[in-house]
Image (tube, rainbow, N blue to C red):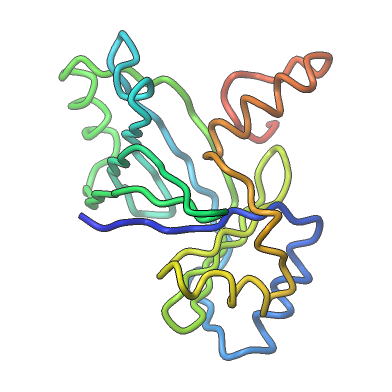
Length: 185
């Protein structure tokens, strides 16, 4: 089990951040790839009501099952416990979770590019509601890396992509957006 510490900062132009990463000693770890995430919960929503997340993520040829504990905040930094394991067959993993009485509650997609700045992971996320940069690592390093990239850590938003999508949909009922955060086909 690890503790995840991150800043999630909305941006207008991922290209500007990418260019700053290229002019530093940052290393590209993963070029842009589509991620498909499925969230699972009990029929009574016990996981979500406790602030927990059970996710199955598919990206390229990898499938990851992740459990996240309830989030807490220290300033703009979100922290939560995380347990993650890779599984060889995502469809079988989803079937097992279903047989255990869990149901899929949401699907969300994003196009993610991953960089490493020393020991800090920087992800450039393009989502159906806009673009975000996540800066993840040791809390003492996050603000400095964000500033180095030209980002203001104080503009970090609390919450997950799920809660941000729910807020985005609620603020735009005229768009008739789906409950799932997916790219139009």
